[in-house]
Length: 528
Image (cartoon, rainbow, N blue to C red; front, side, top):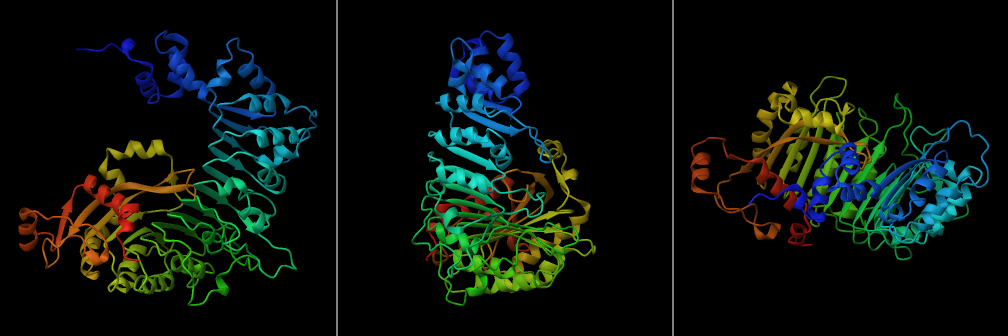
């Protein structure tokens, strides 16, 4: 039986509408009697406006409809800033009153995004906006951009309890300092963070009063107990991870601000970094499933100022999955990481390495294979994945990447051909405990959710490593993983020398393995 489009119920229509562009959705809302109610609700569920220039127009649009449906459908509101960062024209004291009225009446609003918050609050009448935001109670997601003194004071007044909180201080282009100063106790004591399961903090500098001897809040006094995911940019994870005893995923980015490498947005912050205070008796702050580190500081130096911070973060979180990148000259850091992987309490089972070439023209991947990989020979690693990208600074948008997916030649760079052919065998032979190898080349693709602003995307080739004891599984039970059966045909291929101990598996199975090794279910199998 063929079901006509017009006979579909609203729930099914809503799923269909979600797959089309916003422009097509608007056309359907204006032309189709059947789809119009569903499309209209979808369009009105997420709105954007420029404040304060469009405040009154937005107020009239949302509230002056007879049936008041627009305000009922509003679930997410994004407030962009129309003010120039260099010049503010005088505004009337009630310029934000129309927008404040909408916020107060939007009872079904569950997501709020505010850009250039500090500038908007500093505008005459901006306090009205702050009061309205503070009064909103039902938010599940809150994102505040450009938070400084006024923004932090507002955060202390918030009455909502969102599960997702994103706070970003001044941008990298702010003058003179791209990071906003904040008292550690103030940040740690924010109620919105104590109730959030996913926290993002970018570019805050923890500064204490000169008379304070202890620069950081004690974990037992301030706990973000509900936090399962923490994303930091240009902030010290050694200082903040102890506040999250139940953390499973930690994402960290260290960003270089000056093109000549003379200065960075992270480092030399002795007021709050505890790196120098740690000795061999570092206490475990939390047992991480995934530690994802993006380091764009001092590419060609032998000893970066943040290497100690990275090493200590690994020591205090005991990650199951470590995602890192390799810059030419990072051998000192990788030597320390390899040593940590052999510690009695180490839980590292999956190493995910991003490779790229620097200006010298030397292959970073080859340097890592020759100098760093052998250091992990005595570890308990079960999987190693290499991600290869030509230029880490060349970032493409998602649409351009999708256009390349169907063309394998576009995703596989000729530059990496030798490495892709050589690496699986080299890796498998170097690590006796290894059970899986993956290699992929691709591009850095725009990703606003990532601290670095982009993330790697590409197609991966996966292999199962076949050892002498065929059928023994991914690892013994003492290593805490599940067994995987190897069929007879695969065994014959391996014994005949084809692949020399490697059996290629399809990408779908590889993705399943990747997902499992990153999961809480796998982490629970490890003996702590």
